[in-house]
Image (spheres, rainbow, N blue to C red):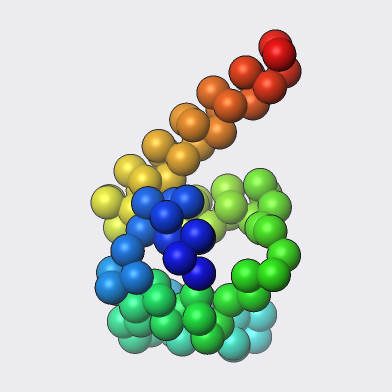
Length: 88
């Protein structure tokens, strides 16, 4: 969990609120504040890496301005590392 927080520039004590409709999000703590630490510890599978498509979808639904900035920095770093990998 600490690796995930560090990778995306998040803090375990930061709180988010998740809103969703339908049954696909039933395992998530919806419509109430939850800490990133609790979310990652109890509601998210960390064994498998998220796909780029899943990360883009998550980023698209982010409403917190600070978190949006973190996502932008992440995608910029990803673009740079992809270009370096392709040219190397």
